[in-house]
Amino acid sequence: MHTVTQTFAVEAADGQFVRGTYRDTGAGPVGMFLHGLLSDAAGDKSMSLWHLAEAKNRSWVRFDMRAHGQSDGTFDEFTISRAMEDVKLIFGLFPSRPKLLVGSSMGGWVGAQLATEHSLQICGVVLIAPAFSFMEQLYQSVSPSEQQQWLDNGSWHFDSEGMDDGFSLTYKAVADARQYDLLNKPVEYGCPVRILHGRLDDVVPADQSVTFSNRLSAHSDIEVDILPQADHRLSGHVDYITEKVNDIWPVET
Image (cartoon, rainbow, N blue to C red; front, side, top):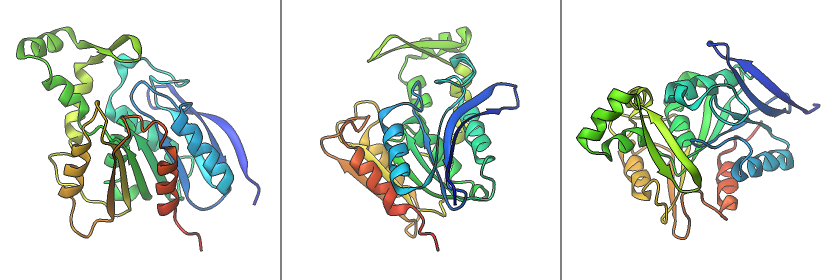
């Protein structure tokens, strides 16, 4: 069957467009990379997985969530709910096909949440340093008086390594994210879950992934690999990521 590669722009309910690129073999599973906060679909991990899909002749999608990369929207509009809406829009391009999600940091949180919705035909998730509930953790990291200022002003500014101007997170995003607290609510998966986390991660503690996995039922197909020399980005460890994708990619019959 002929493989098609093309760019796309899918319109969201608010009239903004989610943009990306897919390669479609015409049948079988579809892999998708979910980027992190203030990242995009052109990063090293995203492109490495795209090239793996080319080498294995797999269907694959890379795209920017709204307020990121080439997609529409501004960061003050961003919420986890909007991110999940964007992923579901992309699902709509392949309505009857199983989806395998690879999510990095914030994208890992989004992928892990979506995989709890069993009607979405998600056949596996690979989570890279998943940043579960990081918005609430940022909110709790400031003093009560600063939290009140955050609420009053609508946003709070954070300095960030590698970003000259840092970033501002809205209180709306914090409040929205509370409904997706995977660390404190019952979670159940019907697909394989693989988590990769660097022990040297100074953004999201690696122990958080271990705690998350320990909360899942004993029959869950979940594995957690803590890489002793890896940081939050898993720089230099892309082979581990592709290995996990290969491990859980469905065998086509």
